[in-house]
Length: 111
Image (cartoon, rainbow, N blue to C red; front, side):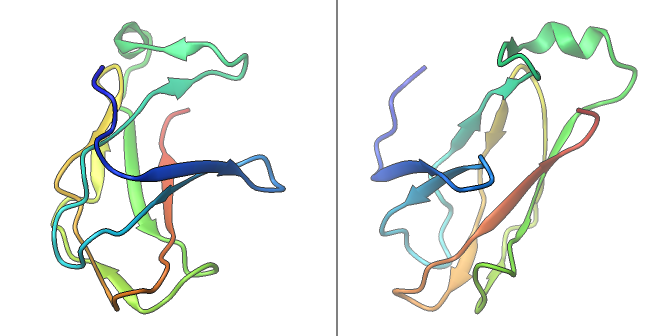
C-alpha cells in the first residue's frame, strides 16, 4: 500500500482510542483518501475472507464528534463506506471555519 502524501500524526487518548490528526486541509474539498484496516479483539488483521463468515455487509459510518468540536459539517453525500478487506474513505468533504480543529467519529457495524 502507498504511503500517505499528506501531513498527519497519530496519538492514543486516555480511553485507548486511536486519533489521527490531519494537518492543513482545505475546507469544502475532498480529504485525501483514508484507508483503514480492521482488527479483531486479539489484534489480528481482518481481511475480505471475514465477509464470507457473516451474512451482512460491514459498514463504516462517519459522523461529527460534537463533544470535541463544532462549527463544521460533512458536506459530502457519502458518509457510509463498505468493508472490502479494508475501509477506503474517498470523497469525504468537510466544510469548516479555517483554522478550527474538527473531530469525526468512525463507527463500524457488525463487529
